[in-house]
Image 1 (cartoon, rainbow, N blue to C red):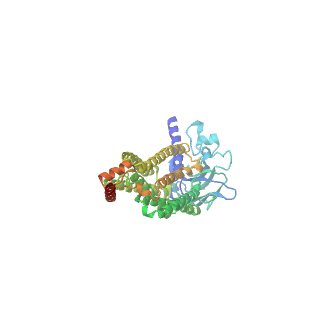
Image 2 (cartoon, rainbow, N blue to C red; image 1 turned 120 degrees about the vertical axis):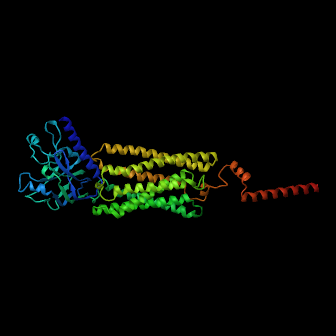
Image 3 (cartoon, rainbow, N blue to C red; image 1 turned 180 degrees about the vertical axis):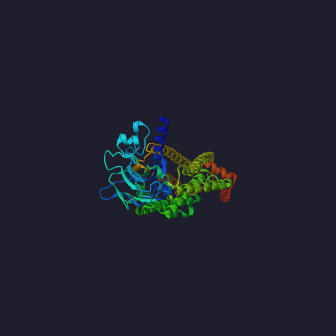
Length: 507
């Protein structure tokens, strides 16, 4: 009995945690299209959403029910031919995360139940067949419970049209539709709920990101302006690598700008624009792919210690295409449409390929970078070697920061299963954009267009910066310019000898 009690309690807790997590990033207008109820212990329930909602004095925050209708089967309707006590009762329960223990009860310290059982009715005075509700210590109105009851043999029951629940306290709010009537097994719901913050329809966790993308767009615009200025000034000396950097900057600016418009539309309408969201995640996937392929190519020494990637070109392109497809699928699954359409296992299915490819690319980049540094050191190319050392240091710092932040992210989510720290959750998303921008700035600084940027490029007949390398090049290869120089020196020597001979005759 104790084992069964513990399993039931664990199942209820896992269910609440699961639905809070998967609905946390859903749109502020939650649509229910005959969504089925799920059996948990003695109750049947459905998550209606979970969002951080802020309270303000000058603006109103609320949760509004629109056209909420519950549908039962014909078999269930036949069991209630006439109005009966607590017959066919469905309840909408809204509670703040801090008051989650105010829902449900436990008789004699045993298993915790959402619904009022005969034993709990005697102990706690609750009504049998209803959700157990204990008033909050801070506000006795909360948690809010709204009753809807089927009448007669009707197949549907409607919640009061456009009923609103005002939010006067900032917190993480959860909505559940619950029935304790076992005869309503297979119950479904249609309609929608509208969740509004003081500044708009954006969920509380996402609201700060709209301002963040404004600042990121400005930062990318400044970087783009500086880069284009140098780019135009030294157009004749621009390398292929710098063309690629230009495309990454442009894509970054577009991505940040589109993210802002996506969030602005979301905030004003309450629904996410599928078209803009699809565009922005596609641009982001292209930017990430080009960035990684660019870093890999530079690490291999393409255009620096070798003219091209040679036989590795096909492999690099294949990895790039695979990474783009994996990233695009993950982003579309995560951002386009409602997050509730994706189960946890399905989302993991999209995350794992991206994580594996990132780990593979990091390993390949640092292996190639090590070989390139050895080649530059052997050739005594001091200028290129210094640039690559700074580049490798920047990459190392980026990887270390990423690993540390992933650890923090895991800790953040593990220690906050009910998202009570939702007001700081936007930082987790923003960090990756800041880190990518910082690395891009370092790359722009190291490979900025200039009059002398051609010295970074691969030159078949002049790969060194030291006098020894120049001498070796003159002696062994004697390019056209060197031949002319040798001839000129020979003529000067002959003239000098003739002058010396004439001076000797005169004496």
